[in-house]
Image 1 (cartoon, rainbow, N blue to C red):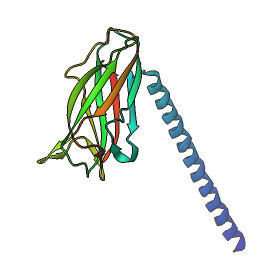
Image 2 (cartoon, one colour):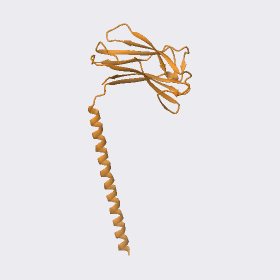
Image 3 (cartoon, rainbow, N blue to C red):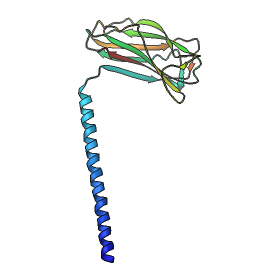
Image 4 (cartoon, rainbow, N blue to C red):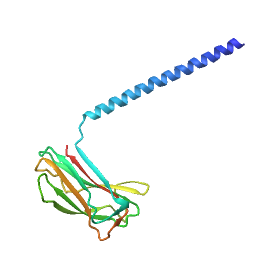
Length: 181
């Protein structure tokens, strides 16, 4: 009887070992598939610049004007420019007024544009994507894609120009520049 029990235990251990080997083989195959997928997508160059700057203490002061520097090499292509803004559900307005400045390479003058960025409305609520009480909206900064005339380093600055200073419950602001395909 002891020998029969020993054989059953050995059989159980053998089956358990086979399951582990099968699982390891599956895991290795899945890992190789994931690595191959990452390498394949890494070969496709994505022409996007995006940077966000946190607003200190979520209180956006007039004098806090984040700047974003990005390089343009291809002056023949068109680019979409977006403002990316994160705010809490406690933000008191449906919009935000911004001054967006752009300085071209080797230029001493910053061209400024005032933008009324809609964040939501009373009927439908907040626009963009939200999780819990944090919302992110990505809105075009221009009406149509633009073409940069000079190659080189461009600088964007973003300032809030609402009547309230500091402007509470704004978490971060950013700029996204993507090449039109």
